[in-house]
Length: 333
Image 1 (cartoon, rainbow, N blue to C red):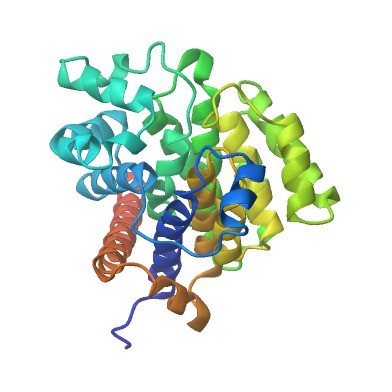
Image 2 (cartoon, helix red, strand yellow):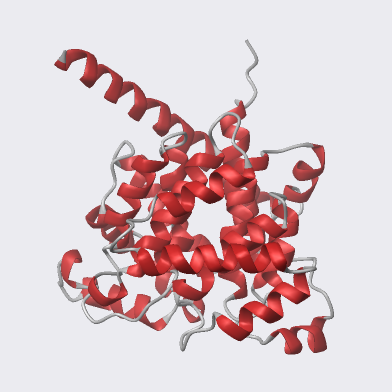
């Protein structure tokens, strides 16, 4: 038997590593308007560095998933925030959204995890971090969505519960993309189907509207202009603005993770987060060919090595979790 990475590991690595690339590529354009991006950069299609808060928060969640054998909940993610506090308040602290820093401070002051989301602003923090949940639940998008809803409750409840819907959609799309025979249309439909039809009606409608918009657009810039005219929110990282854009870009990129990263980086507003999520979903679907492996080699060597280890550990967790559940079912019969 080959000692190389399995097919699932290669797809998981593409998901994780292209997510970092999208995060890094979108970092210089974050919060800029499309016109300002064009004025400063022309067309962004290169990157430097190893990501921002998107990658940090995702890695904290990945650690929680691995430690719990794939059963992490909101408390487990919060525990990683506490254990790895220095990564949040370190050299990249200025890249974190204020509500996340506030939530982290609440934890440090003794608030229980179930209380820190009260009164928070909408953001994409849960959705941008959620790919490890999709990997550990690879092939089981309903389980991924349910777990994502629980984990996202650390930051988003009540009147910003639509951010939980966004996390569920991204987790489900990732899990579906990691299924054998996955198709672009299939994973995008799964993203919508994962959201509760009553409670999540707003997010389902927005994703559907964005898909209609991207199908009708002649090209990326036409889509971008139309999207900015109709989907913008008061806060750029509001998941009602970012996640419909992400899933539309996944379609526009035709599942290609590099193109998704480039489109996201040139999109404007919360560009790093949009590029991170879109590239990760496409990476999960595409896996790694020779060209993709060459793209990944542009990452700093230590970051790429960390992504390879994380992919192995998350896939191992996925297999162990699936086996434990098979045994539990067999023993119950």
